[in-house]
Structure formats: C-alpha cells, structure tokens
Length: 156
Image 1 (cartoon, rainbow, N blue to C red):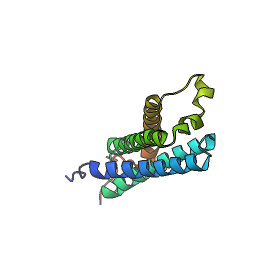
Image 2 (cartoon, rainbow, N blue to C red; image 1 turned 90 degrees about the vertical axis):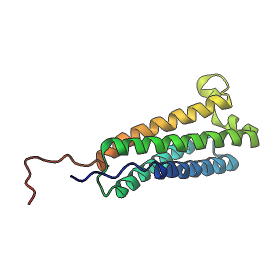
Image 3 (cartoon, rainbow, N blue to C red; image 1 turned 180 degrees about the vertical axis):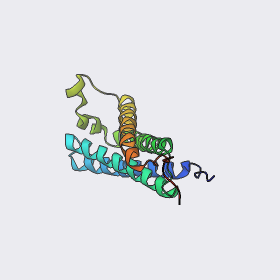
C-alpha cells in the first residue's frame, strides 16, 4: 500500500514569507502613494492573501502528485496565511515607526470610536489574515482534496 509523502513545512513557510513580503510591499507602496486609507486598498490586500494561500495549497498538491489529504491542504493554507500575516504585522510596526502618520491612514477611529495602538493593529492583522486563511483553505480544499476511494469501482 502506497503512502502519501510527508508534509513539507519548509515550502509552506516559504510561501507564507513570500506572500507576506508581497503584502508588505503593496502596503508600503499604498501608504507612500496615499491610497492606504481607501477600503479598496484593504480589499486588494485580502485578495493577495487569498491568492498566496491558494498558490501554497496548489503547490502542496503538486508536490504530493494530487494525493493531498484534506487536513494536509487545510493546514498548509492556514499556516501560509498565518506566516504571511505575521510578516505583514511586523512590517506594519516598522512602517508606523518610519511613517508615524500611517496609523492615521487606517481610519480605525471612525469605525471603533477610539485610537488603535500599533500592538492592537498588529494583533488585528494576524487575526484577520489567519481567519481569511481558514475560510480560503476550507473553500480551496473542496477543489484540491483527494477523492475517497470507491469500493464499488473495480481496478482493472
């Protein structure tokens, strides 16, 4: 009986770091060009995170020759999104040190009625990114999961 290849966390972390760097570059460019305060900028950020998560799951499926278990792909997507969110969160902390007005661009005061600290923004970025990764992974694994063997089907 053939067994599926073991999980390769190195590729999952590398895809997470790659996605996080892409998100960080986009966020920095958005802050420098002055459109960071628009809601569309945040939506594009989430779409990039979804894309990175999907690429990581697709890459993992290719590495296993299509024999990707549901949990393996699900965990790949979550870890990728978590690593990308941590990279983006730390990058946002650095961005607020370099550009102190970056927190003013988030419009958090308008939504919550109080100023958001950098630490709370860091935690919010991680939470939102991870939850996006969970939802994306659930949806993506409906496409990438390995079909269960059919006992009624003969193997000729």
